[in-house]
Image (cartoon, rainbow, N blue to C red; front, top):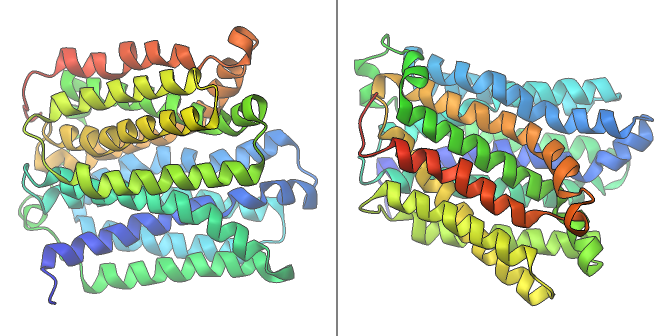
Length: 389
């Protein structure tokens, strides 16, 4: 069966983003080993883990705006080359600082997700856009599932596991690079206007600012939840690391199913569905907070997964309705950049609030108020109808 050009482009974008996130997850299983081998403190481990997201925060707006000027495809190609170099450095690393440099390199080039989202928006109509954003969301889910799993498997392959894992990720990035070069075509809308990119709409548009505020709130809270969840399950249910791995696998597969089915459909009202997604996230936190058994916990996580899938697919789609195509890369770049910074801040918030002495050590319930007040409220109050900035 012959695939359409758009389908081939979606598959390529999927691989571009998935390989980025797989690389991000590869290092997670061996953080304790790195700390032991190189005699590093927990603070240095935290810095190492945050390096990727912090580099993305800096690079995403720049790469997004650059894609407005020189085109989406060149940025995707250049950034993928950078990722491959980062993996080579990781494969050859024999010190903490070489690993740190490899994470920064991969993070700076990982900002290409903003260009990938902009490309998906360029090749779709407004009605098709949720489908394009769902492809990016599915790639995120795949990366977060396969990254730690692949890393844990390959790092266990004797003394050369470190190099094998890095070279495997580099090979996947090389495949994604070749597909980008030979399959992706520069979107027509990009070839018609490459010199009009402006960051000013990000600052001047109330609607875009509202969506960015919602993104910051959502990403800080979700990363805070994600980083403290294993501590929560150990304290409340005495779950082992293997048990938690199975739960994260359950969440990831469920999110993939949701994003591959429900969120691929274009809703009639993006704003209402996005707000509904935030409400479901809040309900999920309520269910998790009051879960007294594993069955109720899985139920709460299922609800949360639905809300997360809706927000991840429809909030970026809503953003694209508020900006011109000429500025889309810059706007999405800022959106992705602040999301990356939020993933740096989130764990700090989690370990200083959620795991505080209040409420028996866990205050997931208070996340509900924050989601409702700082999450969808700005979007609901600032957006009336799609108006390009």
